[in-house]
Image (cartoon, rainbow, N blue to C red; front, side, top):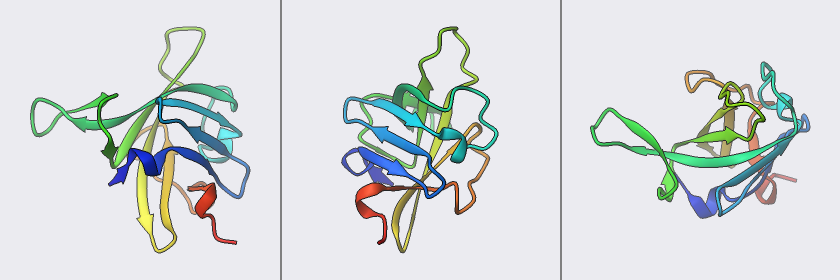
Length: 125
């Protein structure tokens, strides 16, 4: 589980993907195909993000602006049309190097080590 304050900031991977998550739930990215190889939309994008939070039942989850922590999140991409095919899911992981995020089209997908994004301020030198 990651707190919103820990998620906010700049994230990147060695292959050139860059993501910025703001406290106001704004999201911007460049080179996103280096984090999501099968992504067919613009590789430079902007939108909003929300944590997935427990819904009314124990098995339902909803994207929530009021949730301040989570294990996964939704990125809603601003597009000219009303399609959601450009939206992404984010999975938060933690290992001995700290937090990483895996951006995918489907929450059941996973990332390779090269696709994982790390917060720029905590990237090992």
